[in-house]
Length: 226
Image (cartoon, rainbow, N blue to C red):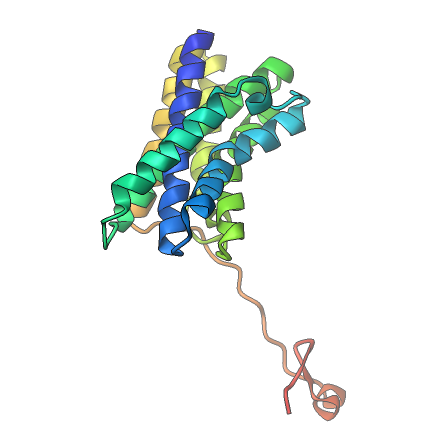
């Protein structure tokens, strides 16, 4: 695949995830510095984990400072744009996050194939690239990362990775496989959001306490508060 095209989409994903980070920062009433930091970590978090995992060091933003300048410009522009907005629609954050997620899955898969020519590894790295920034963002704001919720978030990344691998196996070009991966990831994520689709949750099975547990005030492994 044309490297200039990959670079364009990488910058595009960086812009989208930077916006996503600033929008989340606005929810928590962070100052401008906090918004820039959160936007930056959202944009480069997944890619940084990816590069460290596959041994592509120094990581991408250390080799090309353009990413940092793009993040800074995007964050400042977004801060100014939403400064007088009292209510920011939830769909704006969801859509920007979904687009960034889809693009970075394709980017992660493509870069992993350059270092480890294994479809399974590339798929997992694609998921890490797509979800990594969001995990960092949500963890810093005290929220449960979307990847651990009932939402079809990481699953849509796996779908995109499988589509990319399958397309390559069928003999399609890298460019076509990339676009199919991004499209399928985005469609899967948007459909899951629109119809509130989710995976089954894991429920704890409750056991009746034994006589000794009742005596000691223990139930299901936890001491009862007196």
